[in-house]
Length: 438
Image (tube, rainbow, N blue to C red; front, side, top):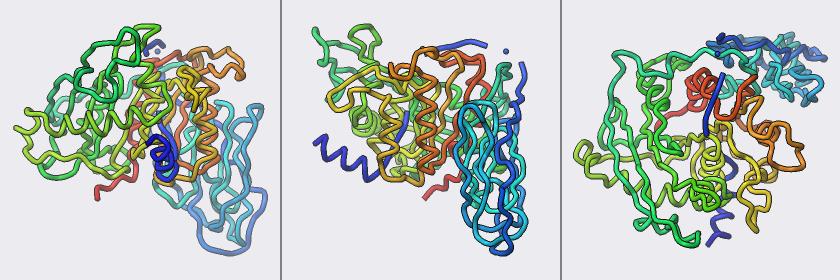
């Protein structure tokens, strides 16, 4: 059974993934990514290059057209000693323009990028410029924020924002066939709260996109939806998402049900979410009373997960072993915590697993890690350094060609609320960029 699911995972493809400190400015240090291409062409199709800038210094919202050739350039990865230098474009015989695409600027090592448009691309601000014709790539790349932080106002529910509908209920270990408590001696007996938020815009009978929130219900997700779901500006919009908050099992060491659920690299958490939690939400009496024909989408592009700390590998698993295409991991514990026979280095292995797996074009992964995150001084060989592990996963996604955003938060610690409150709303805009309901 697990072997067949693993095969299914390879076909579906790769990836996904507790609190706080820090103060001040919303500016992002400008890097040097996307520097000039070394070869100028002489003809060919127009490209879309140019530098981009996102609001609040967190990425690129506007692409400036250029006139370069359309062929991908040959710019290379940069070393930590030379961050944000982008790559030169060499592409098809082209005109005189074309921005250095997908270079990422900023001061967080390692950065840099590869050119995706030939010609003489312009300088890239921090936050990642894009010369790609794919609007979904706006804001891709490596970003540095901090060390001073200002909370984004979209992270708190604004006056007049549509209220939506909420319901909650409990699931017990006795009701589950997947997380029963029997992994430990003596067996654990516990219950967990499930909370669901349904946005005001939901129309009964339609299939809603949704996000799963690990470690219970994270209210910041709801606030962003309430503030932005009605905004027609694509650079200040998220879809009207249903949010499902799932409380973890008991986190009592050494018998931590939470770590078992979240840090184990397997399809188990995905099966729990899709075969037990989602059916319980759909059949909940309060939900059914309000929306008799309530539905959640089966489209992977409409399924996302949010997790902090060990919640990071939990939602990475929703994508890697299942059918979720959108991952938001904050200070993700992508390290060797739960070591199994199949995965002796636990979630540390995700970087290599991404490298080895087939390309999954619709996957989008947001990663954040604090400069002073857990065990940030540990050598890479120990497989327990949060900063290195997240950087490795970002590099693997970049090399594979996936849409990814890696935020390196200067001065921040583990699951740092100051960093999260600044980057989360813009991160969710990026995460859901390009989504269209089927």
